[in-house]
Image (cartoon, rainbow, N blue to C red; front, side, top):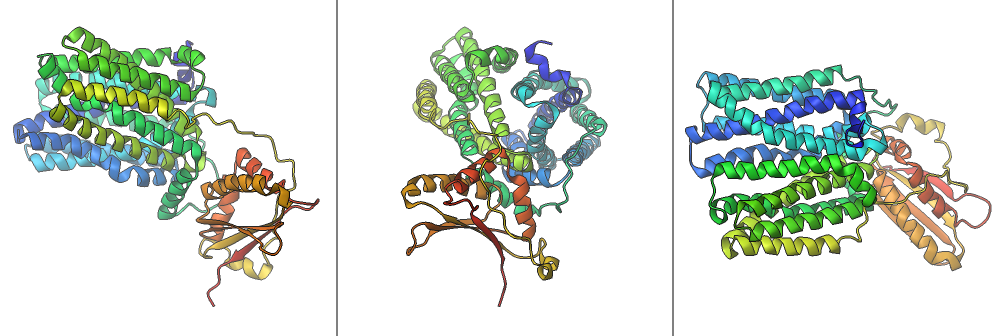
Length: 528
């Protein structure tokens, strides 16, 4: 099988990829039908634009909660519930439209409800991909997901328009329901091997807090989000100004606008197939994002100076290539930066950030186009995009981590006393964990550097607070303190440590003077 299609050799990924392609087509059919129906119910520009707002607003509201739910509930059951919700709402929308009982605000309500289902689906689906393919196929699997999305964007509106012309908008809504039914059936046939845990499930609010703490303490995830926000903020100028370019600069109609979007899809699909060869020439994720950010900046500049559809079409081909290559690489970076226990909520935060950057960028660059002119705004976006892409190269997406087992004695606390074991559960209150070190004062700077990394590990794995204390009378004595929300969270903490985390903690323990390991202890919060 060609390298571009390698992930499709895995039966579970292949099944869900085709079903998700159908669901994405249904989504674009739904959007087409809703937009067209609103033009007859209430043709004011505000109401028509609210259709798109109603479909996207749930992403901002639900990205983090959806990610938390997808991490604490069996992911297959969760995805089945999300598709069942969309199927139910889409079916009701089709029936009410057929019965002539739907007004403009009702249409917005149902559009918002379908957007809720899609917002619930996004982080869970992204977090599921690493379960379907091995690590070496993950980047290309994400690229294939992008190819599928661009294919659906190319054919979905056309299918929706044909369905509306043939049988009315209710047919488009019914077709959307059928497409989501296919994804629901695929999920029912998927035999997921869910990881088993003796721990009780995390609480919803606690899970969201843990996701935020993980992202805040993860340099790789912070770098991915920063570079994603930088890329999507400037390249969103295309979404804000492409209609103006087509109408005012090129003097063309809506058919040309659809054609420009189609050319972007062609560029994206072609680049998705070429990604395996491109990764040979650009072997690191950071270099891939930088290179295709510059390609996107070039596309913005060409589009800005175009006064004919030919160079504008070339610009959209380039833009599609840059968009898919950079976006899929950033998505893969987010996947690699997150362990399984927190993946969906971390990706939810990532998606919240880049959707926010896209929305803010589209509004800002649209305003710049109206204020300064289309060409200056696009050229300005191109120049700043290129400068920013080079400026953020230092935020590395590729982190080398050692997976060798620790070779030093690690701190190990004593077992809990028998008389306290009955109260050690998820209702125990905060647990304070302590490690005492004896460090040669001449190694102070190196020890502090190691403890800086240790702090990140503790916070990523669930600590709500962390401190390092030095004995003023004995400079060789140090105490590391951190707190977790409960005894159950303390037990989860050990399961969240991967090999790289253990090596970070081993480096800190390696500064211990003498043959004994650092002394560890645990304290339970008690109200006097």
